[in-house]
Amino acid sequence: MEPLLPSTTINFNRRYSVDSTGIDFKHRVSENRIIKKLKVLEYVNEKRDEFQTKIIKDGQASSLIRTKDKFAFVLGVLNLCIISFLAGKFPLMISYLYTTEFAILFLIRVILYKKKNYHYFLFDFCYYANILLLFYLYVYKSPSLFILTYCISNGPLIVAVIPYRNSMVFHSLDKATSVFIHILPSVVTYSLRWNSPEILATVDKQDIGIGWRQFFFYPILFYVLWQCVYLVYVYQMRKDVVREKGYITSLELLSRIPKNKKPSFITKLLNSAGQQNAKILLIFFQFLYTCLTLIPCRLLYNRQILHSVYIVLILLVSIWNGANFYVTVFSNNYVKEMKDREERWKRIIVSSFGTTNPHGTNSAGGSATNSPVLQSSTESISPTNSPKPTNFHLINSQGNIKEIPNESMLTDPKILE
Image (cartoon, rainbow, N blue to C red):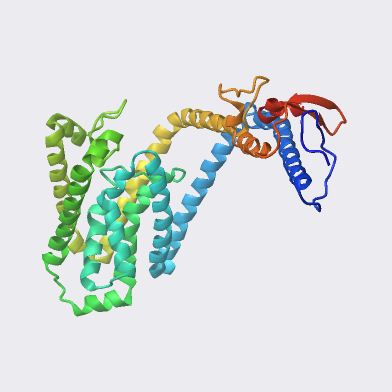
């Protein structure tokens, strides 16, 4: 068996046995690897134009994107139906569904927000409120901790749907996650308050008028503790990192004036106050908001019908926001959004398949070996211990012979055409 040298003829239809040893065996293994890689490149080259025609020219990229949105919409509606069913039939099972979905959605949000430089939003109060609920469910169950969790979930957390305009938009993972984080903890505490035997027995043993200390002072103390940690970490310890890398926090988001939209009262006030005073104003308004939203919790705790109406009203607000999004924003912007997303798909497809031309460059102007497929092939073709040939003779499946420069074989898959 002759080694892979200049003017060596490689026959695609030839098979070698690997039962010998020594130098000849190493050369046969290297030659077999080259043949396999060349076959892969030949297949990619044949299928590339067909794939691009189907996906890009025939508009199937838009179809795939629409299908993904439809699938997400179906899952969102199905999830709402499951929650409604469990709330009526097995109310105590909602906590397990909540735990599973929160773990999945929170992990996805961490990944997506990290890519967008939004991950400092994950230090906001709503996530700490959800962690508090999980702590009660699985770590430490006590009547006092339940009241604290109940007040946080049914006070500042769920009411945040109104100022933040959370929308029940099923095909948007980001909007659906925001609704989930703000509303479902209230549903979980509702199911526990009115259906858990342990909590019902505890309530029966307690005095009917539990003091404002449990329903107001302790929740405020929990909020102040979070606010202090947030201020020290985000605005003191990490302020240089946030400024240099352009990370977005709640203050920056609320201070932004939206394009083609009328700014809210809070946005106008924060912008008129200046950077340093804006931070103080935001802390003051957040504290005032928390105090006001905690006031109804004592009434809700002892009145199931009132509690039910309260949750339904907040849920209707999110549904109304979703309807407004679908009718006004979605109908106007979806076509433009589809075009932008399709363009991103095109760039991904071209870079992945390495659209090549005879000069060894792709349509985007980069090297043909920028393609992951071509890179993996190129890296494995040239054995480090074998002589570097100047050119090859290739025999394709039709029996045609071509003399190919070595560097062209490594970089240009069109030599196999």
